[in-house]
Amino acid sequence: MTITPVILSGGSGTRLWPVSRALYPKQLLPLLGPRSMIQETALRFPAASPLAFAAPMVISNEEHRFTIAQQLMELGIGLKAHVLEPAARNTAPAVAVAALLLAAEDPRALALVVPADHHIADLPRFHEAIAKGARAARDGNLVTFGIVPDRPETGYGYIKRGADLGLEGEASKVEAFVEKPDAKTAASYVASGDYAWNSGIFMFEAGVLLAELKTHAPKILAACEKALAGAKRDLDFLRLETASFSACPSDSLDYAVMERTTRAAVVPVDMGWSDIGSWAALWETGARDVDGNLRIGDTVAVDTSGSLVRSESRLVATLGVENLVVVETADAVLVAAKDRVQDVKRIVEALKAEGRTEAEAHRRIYRPWGFFEGIDAGERYQVKQLYVSPGAKLSLQMHHHRAEHWVVVQGTAKVRVGEEEKLLAENESVYIPLGTVHRLENPGKVPLRLIEVQSGVYLGEDDIVRFEDVYKRG
Image (cartoon, helix red, strand yellow):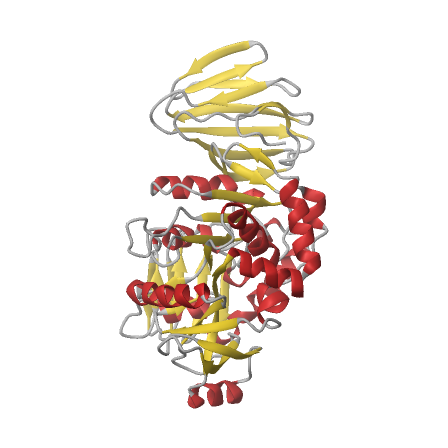
C-alpha cells in the first residue's frame, strides 16, 4: 500500500508579515529551526518508512517553483510531480488536480494531502494516525485528521465527531464541521470531548475523491480536467493550462466536498500540531525562556515577559514590556500586541493600498540563479548586491531604460556585453550601456558576488527583454 504525499504550497502567510511575504512566504522560511517549513514537511515522508511513502507531489504557484525545487534538491528529495497553478484557486482545485494525476495511474491510489506550512512535533504519532487514516480511506472514506485540542482556541475551525466507523475506534464519521467559534463556545467544545481542531490534512483514494467532486463540485472537476488536458511540461514542472484553471471556481476542499459528502471521516490525533498561522502561534510553539519570551536572532530582553522578539539584521532590545511581538527585518519592523497578531494582514492590506513594495517582497529577491538585494536607491539610480550560484547564469537580456555597472567582489564572472565576452576577477568591473544585449554567468565553483549600479529614467524589474533563458522565463 503506497501513499503519495501531496504538498500544497500556495499560501502567502500575510499574518506573519514582515518575515513572510507574497514573493517569499512562510513555507519557504526557516521559522522554527535551520530548515524551511516545506523542507520539514517533505522530510516527514521518508521512502524507507513502513508506511511506504511514494515520492511526494507538490502543487505551487509559478513564482516559487525554483526556490521549492532548490530546497528539496538540497535534501535529496525527488518529486513525483511539481504542478504549477497559473492562478490561486484555494485547495479544492489543487487537490482535484492531484487526484486526477494519481487516478490516471491507479484510481485506488492513496493520497495524503498536507499543507507545506504546518509544524508537527510528534512524528511517530502522526505516522500512527496516517496508518489509521489509510485503513479508513481503503473503506471508501474521505479522511481528515482532527487535532485533539489542548485549549479553547478561537483561531481554528472544529470538527464534531460522530458515530464510530467500526475500525477499532480508529476513526469516526464527521457529524459536523464548525467555523471558528468565540471563546465561550470554544471552551464548551473542548470540555465536551466531542470536538477536534480541523487540521486541513486529508487522506483518500483518488477515485473516491473524484467521484465526490463530480457529485458536489462538478464545475471544479470539469475545469481541472480541462486545465490538466492542456498542461505542458516545462523543465521539471507541469504547467496547468491558464485559461481553464483561471476560470475554475475558487473553493476550499472543506466547503466544496467535505461538508457535503456522506463519506467524511475523522481520525483524532495529538501530535504537537500547529499551523503557525500567526506570530502568537509561533510563540506558542517555540522554545521560550524563563520569562516566557521567544527570542530569535540578535536580541536583548530586559524586564520583558511573554513576548516574541525576532531580529534578522541588527540588534533588537526591549525594556519593561510584556505580551508584545517585535519582529525586525532589513526593511521593516513590526511592533504589535500579542493578542492582536491575527490582524497583521490589515497592515499588509494598508501597504498594498499605498502601493508599498514591502507588502509583497523583501529587500532580498530570490531568482533561480541566486538572489539580488537592494543596498541603496535614489532619483535615477539604485545599487544592488547580486549573488550568482556556482554554474548558474542570468538570461541573455537588455534594458530599454537603464544602464548598468558591475563590480566583482567575490568569485569570477563570465560577462557578455554586445558581442564581446570576457572574464572578470575580483575588483574588476564592466559597464553595460542602455539597450545593449548582455549576460552574466558564474563559471566557477564558488559563489559570485558583485555590486550592480543601475542608472536611468526607469529602474523597475519589468524593464527586462529576455532573448534566451535556461530557466524558460518569459
